[in-house]
Amino acid sequence: MYKFGSRSKRCLNTVDHRLRELCDEVIKHYDFSVIEGYRSVTRQKIMFDKGLSKIDGISRKGNHNFTPSRAMDLIPYKRGHNPFDGSEKSELMFYRLNREFQRASRKLGIPITWGGTWNNPRDYPHYELA
Image (cartoon, helix red, strand yellow):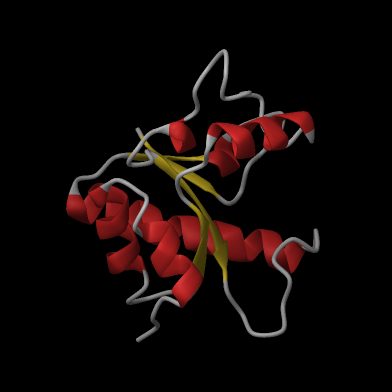
């Protein structure tokens, strides 16, 4: 069985209990890291200014900006592999992680939305409560 590292645990402490439940279920079957939960307005503005978010956190809050957070960012984990390298292998790892989350979502009755289904841009790490 896989387990969360310290960064994942810190991030999980900032998200809605339902997202934690999903993560606790998925980690039993697939290794991944939680790289972000709650996002401050300052961090949200930085993400917006870099073009990494369409929400500035000031005129409009995103699901990361609530306490507890209604969204989280995850990456599949494989030692020595960068999941953001743009390779087909990395993309497939994100899709496999999503399959595990969709399975857990059905099992636990917690509806979620995955950013990998969005257009312009796809946000493979992003999950939020539906």
